[in-house]
Length: 369
Image 1 (cartoon, rainbow, N blue to C red):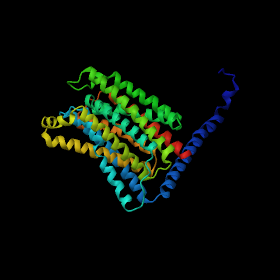
Image 2: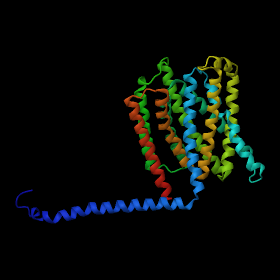
Image 3: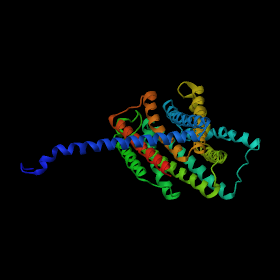
Image 4: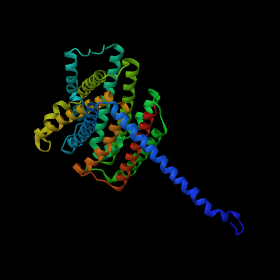
């Protein structure tokens, strides 16, 4: 700007205009914050206190139960367990716990069992088989990977849930979902690049790679199961009451238990349980407790997830299932002293960022709708 430029003489006039922009911006932010607080307050007032108590209790139970179930799977292998079939069998062996919750409303006549058509039964068989395969894949992952690494990799299930939900159930795939997919994929790649830093002693490179692959495949299958379950509700059941959701969980868990039990018999792992228990760290009692609590915690997680689907939505259940990923990773570092390299910390931060993006985006979509 040269010395003769007349705009030089307008300098005293411009600061008030420039200053007005931040004031307006701050006012807009305050207005949005007030609207958000009012929206939250209105949402809170629409439901009784008992509803929020049950939702909070179910959310906490889901996070604690599924995190504990994952840690117990790793504890089984850390203390001398070898079988992939046994730990995947334990995940569904507690299905009667979920079934018992259905008995009171049935016996009291408050609800009636959903008629089991041939088509619905075929879907349950398919979902049961896929669930059994999914549990087996995750068993392979926890056999060869640290629990923190396995849990971070399993966050990719959110990616597959979004993709399968879009193509199978026609769910919206918004910008936040795409952003979360890219970010979480980046976190997975970072773990793959740093695979040598957290491999347990005695685990070969081939075994670590197998665990990595099975974890990703299990996460993909988990996303497919979620989408297919949604499809069953849309096409066959047409309603999503608590007992209907619970019926589906019971049937799928029961059939997964049947398929896994067949695998145990064929692989002769039932006969090997006594020998495995005798060689287990801290003895047979510890072996029985690990498997028992693995079964109980998994089913408690299923019950809590079912309650969240009924009280809120499948989106919230999916979000909480994703939130447990960093919780499991941190707990594994504390309890199992899992190696935590700089790359894994970066992956954890990126994963949490991706999950946050997904949560914020879907919260905005739900609010707008």
